[in-house]
Each structure stands twice: as structure tokens, then as C-alpha cells.
Length: 393
Image 1 (cartoon, rainbow, N blue to C red):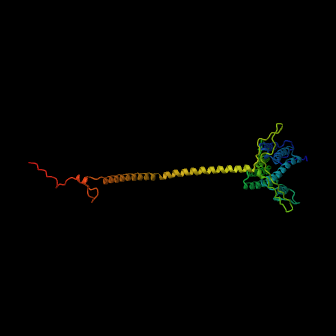
Image 2: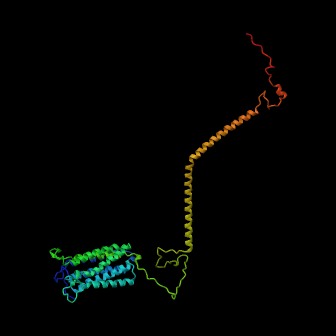
Image 3: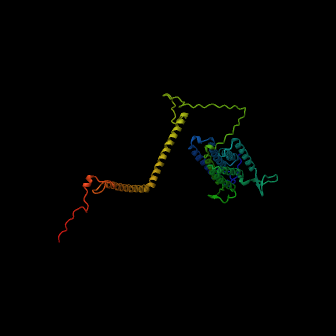
């Protein structure tokens, strides 16, 4: 177990304890990612925190510590401390995403995890040799792990994209976090695979360091995005309970629900150490419901009456504006008619007065003889009047 492992460019073939200073130092990124996620989780309400969140954050802490130990000691025991927390995190997060995000029941979630574990195990058995990829036979002697041991992480990357796409279709707020995490993880896998290929090209302070340190930094960012996505779990993301099928043999007991008036708790005493809570849920009774309905109906009736009165006033004003010119013409015509009637009444009065007046020498009634008084008052005619002497010239 103490045999040294020479797997990365920065260590090369050195057995020194700090032969990989950059690879060891960049594991601080995992610790920072876990610390920030923990602070964000503690700021959430208690009912929004779960054991799953704390478990995922703790696994990220262990990933950083195990990876740092491996790049310091570089033996098989520290190698287990490096890969075991990573494998556990992959399985736990897959179960979390399938169960909490996709709302898959627990039984199917367990089967999904088992299937994923089998795929990863088979993928890690692939070997690469000159012109060949797969399971080497007995005649192949120079077969090595593919992509510098990074092939086993490809199923996890594909799973991130699959779950992210499904969440995107459901318009889940965690979808973009998983898709970005998958894209960054793909770049991280590529840089891990090219560590020896680019060993001579990446030189810092005169030392060949390769690209494995970038794997640490990008992986820390990937895990931080996954932790943020886990905080996007909604209350309705819990899996639906499995339906319970009742048979004819199962008894069904329906208990009546009795609603009592007022609170059921006794009045607190002075010696009661636990005071009443500030917010007390009121008890809704039938009388209260009927009263609320009557109040609502009364308010609706008043509103309808006010609306009808307002509409009537508006219609009356509009009618007045429409009938304004017509009323003026009617008033003028009425005044003219009144004037004509007055003139006609005056003419009739004059005519009546003229008919009643009798002048001397006129018969009161045609064909009626005059009386003696009337005859004495009659003036003599021209023949009966004496002739006047003509004046002398």
C-alpha cells in the first residue's frame, strides 16, 4: 500500500513528499466550494435544509482532503482516499437528482444507481493499446488505462447532461446549473486526459506541471454548481407517494369531524411557563362561514347599486346633452303659440264688445220696431229738417 504511484506530469518519477506542490495546493478550491455552499445552506430556513445537503457538502470536503493527501503521499492508500469520496459523491448526487429533481420513487432510484454503478465499472475495464480500445485479450501486453484513467468519469458527465435536459423540459430552476456543470466537467476531463501530452508545454517557474491542476480547479467549480443546484429543490419536488390499492377485504373507517366553536386550548394561567404563541390559527365554523358569505353578498349588492346609480346619472346627463337643442326649440314654439293665443283672445274680446254696444239711430235688432223713447230720440231726416237760408253775397 506504500508503493508510490507516478501518474501525473508534475511528480514525474520523484518520490519526494512535496513533489506536486501545485497539484496539492489547488485542492483548496474544493474546500472553498464546500465552505461557501455550507454558508448558503445555513442562511436558508430550517425547513429548507435537509440531511442530503449536509452529506453532499461533507463529501466535497472529503474530496478536497483526499485529493490533497494523494498528491502529497502518492501511494495506493492515499489513492483510495482520493477516489472513494469522488465515487460516493457521484452515486449520492445521482440518487438526489433522480429522486428530488425528477421525482422518481425511491425503489426506481435505487435501481438507477445500481445500473449507473455497473456502467461505470464496465467503463473502467476498458483498455487502450496500439490501435485498439476495449477488453484486451491474453495476447495483449502493452494495454493501459484509457485517457489517463479519465474514461470512468464519462458516464457521470453524460448523466449530468441527461438530467439537465430533463429538468430543462420541466422548466426547473436547477437545469442550467446541471448543464453548465456538465459542460465544465467535460473540459475538466479533457485536461486531465492531456496531462502527459501537454507536460512539456505547460511550464511554471521552470517546472513542468502539466494540466492536472486545472482538473482540480474546474472540478471544484463543477461541484460548487452541483451544490447550488441542490439548494434549488422546491417543496413540490418530493416524489409522489405510491398509490395504495384497497381491496374489498380492507375495512374503511370514516371518522366524523367535529368542529367546535372557539379555541380548544384552556386559558393560560399566571404559573404557565409556556405563554401562548403570538400567531394562533383561528377555528373556522359554519356560522363564521355563513357570516362571511352574507357580508360578501351585501358588499357585492352595494357595489352593484352604486354602479347602477352611476350609470343612470351618466345616461341622464347624456340624454340632457342630446335633448338640449330640441328643448330650446320647443320653448320658442310654446312662447309663439302663447303670443298668438293672447292676440286671438284680445280680438275676440274686442269683437264681443263691439257687438254689445248700440249707437243711436241703429236698431238693436234688425226688424224690431223702436219704442216711444227710442223714437223721440231719433233725429229728423233731411227732408223734415227746415232749410237754412243761403248766405248773401
